Image (cartoon, rainbow over all chains, first blue to last red):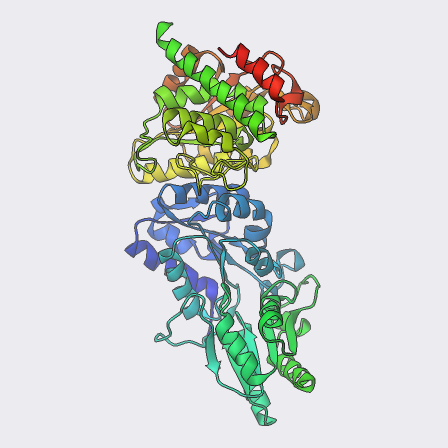
Length: 313
Length: 270
């Protein structure tokens, strides 16, 4: 069985490493440090960790002030609260003045599980992506999450890094190098391209194996940087294969599927099918059950590929 | 007190700028800018350690105008203090200007934080105070909060946090002029007793007349001597202060004076 690690685990460990190498890194949390894994940093660097209590709006605003004072703040909460409860603070205190705040949100997507729809953020990519100056990253596995965190610390400006609660398969080795704004072609193919992010990248790779058995050869692209989107790589794949499927643990409205559709609609229209949550809220259940329930599986990606192939000119 | 004569002259000049720039822009917020003019003058011309030649000097004191709609008072003061040319004041709210309708820290030197969405500035001031403490700097952070603004929940989140983290390098002024867009604070949404509220949240609270320089400086001294907690200086002010027809008139919260009204105001501010 493939090894699984949660991207939030990687985040917590990355913060500890960062804390050792960069004295300006500070971390804020809103009473969820054990869940977001910022507690790992708090244990090592208590003087640079600020628990802001259950007050996300003030957490984001305080992070903005810390950044204006020369610090590199990582502010964490669950994705629903970090992007929803504090949306206007992210907009007006972080993105508008282009302040050096990093928001790392965990428990994104339906794989939060049993806590249910109130806690399953399937709109956060959409609402962070619309903000000018915001960089949006959705790591596919622990290694990518770690490197994205390091990259964010080294790069001036607002970042949103979307992390998950549940373990996700390891798909990158230690030799992998994350490049901001660069999509990763994980498998070459000629019949259709699947552009995925987060835990759906592993599902897309599994779909590729399933489809190969049917003689269908798909390209698999990991678009970890949702914004700025790597239009060059994605458009090239669309031109080469003539059909695109997107896959994300997020609403099909406003997230990766929308970003890719916008791009292709403007530069190289090809049939697109979007795999994601279809304009619904989540509900309680085990993470694996929910992925099945909402159609976020290799099987559904394979079906979408077959649908899109029928639409090819 | 003769020593304050220069400050009074400066505050009057700043009030003149406010009336002229809002008049020229044809929109803006004169009432709450005029009410805060003496406090901001006191900070920028005597209290704060700063250097207009080096707006990014790391050791500088910081000022966050949390009630960002009072941008004209900040711009007028920064220009008087030499951060940018005074003639630029007349570009307020015009396309391409560095003087946005609400302060934009990205573009204008001396503006520490983009504000205007009410309730957010005090949190940023907290962050600046924490950063200064981490760096072992003597930097002091000042914030100006509106009395309508404290109806925002985020203000009380920030109040809690400032007390929890014992931010004694932070002092905030409450510009307590009693009026907000829809009318008197007490009619729109009761906020009294404000002193008891801040005290209950763990702040050191001082009440002053916000148009009396001696009281402003005495409060600032007391704030500096207060250890282990942030200080809130509740400054009783008059909205529209200095322009007779604007004083205590809610209608001048967000209205620009016409040419003849500008002239009348300037005649009073000599």
